[in-house]
Length: 580
Image 1 (cartoon, rainbow, N blue to C red):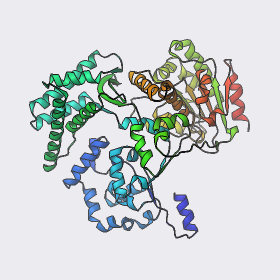
Image 2 (cartoon, rainbow, N blue to C red):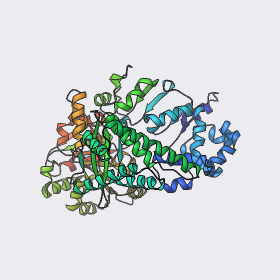
Image 3 (cartoon, rainbow, N blue to C red):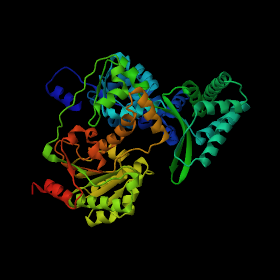
Image 4 (spheres, rainbow, N blue to C red):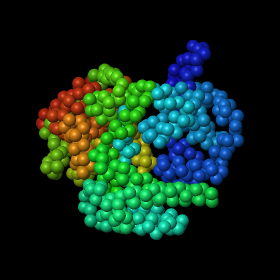
């Protein structure tokens, strides 16, 4: 947009191209109180509203004082607003002028022809409603461009899913006690809390499916209710009580985090979806820093619940992805049910054939029965051949943390050191900031006089999908193992549901496709610019049988490497040394 705007300006055209990139409230907020609470997106909306209503946000008040600037924001900074505006530039301007960047961006929206935003602004029905109101448009007046569209399948089901935990129930109980709630409301939260704590002690698996009707009956009977209608009326009373608490907190100038309302909404959704096969109900266990926590979850199975309204009512949508399988994608999001015509375009790869070397390694099989020291030592030896030939940085993305740990236990660090490189290991417990520093250090060793580094992570993780490694930041990527998810009850429920609605294609759509998608995403990390050169190694023989699922731009370059010593070297050494 900036390049086009500059071009128009040089041509002295009268047409002005404007646009803005915006972020969520949490990323743009400058209020220290809200930042310190570290709320999720729905909580921050409520907290922000209370701060504004109680005149406790100086940045928002300062913005309101600049009435002329709200009516014509260009007056704030003519140089900035006469061209496309990046969110970082807007935030820096607002820090300088001590005004709210989030609401300034909203005041700018109606004048913008192009808006760049997170998927949630459009996909989430509640956020979309507010967003469209701010820009002064209806959905049918919008052309939507969805970049990296493969992400919206999972995001659409996440938006429709809900969970509660002992932590949220304790906070709920605190508010119920503080605001003198009826005893039955206390009992309800305590029954749920005790139930989850007992389940946590008994559960050995990471997930356990629930009969939603049975649990619902047990809970309303434990409360002394005789039928579901009586329980539903109680939940509506609980919701009304949460609204009253919110109003009281606001009147007293307090910040409101509505845990009671969230609990009420959870059970209203449970009642609504209890007999629907589009939802799965379960307990889930999360282990972090050797501590177990439990959630009670309502899991949406069908992304079309969210995507179909968008497809039906928007003016048009352009879906873009470098890794998507068009057939699976159009089924999962419901393109064929949208009532509109659509067209799939498979573009030619822009990358020079001689700059990409793609290999599948035969003789390596990381299925559970083969996960033994002998197999992992073989994998490490083949990785050693890749390291020997590759001039700078290398990424190794494993199918799971189990495989990652097995490589460490079987001596991969010594192999890395033998090749004069440094090993960096991704850890699931790292914060976003800690992980960012890890990647920064990894990239810093890419150029001479350094000999490069090795990043050991997992397929489907933040470093194999959300990060770019152009140039020498990653010369080669090794996808170690076929990245299937664990066959948990929710995966099995999704397979069963997809079998029903997609003509017995459940296993392909719910299990195989997401696994290959993770591999496809990881495989593209080294090739980010037109002149990038990189090697892509699939270290598992199962990729041979599933080759048709691999992205076309890689598939057309693939070679199968036999299980023999030094064959990888024979392929990679000339690739990296052909110009020497």
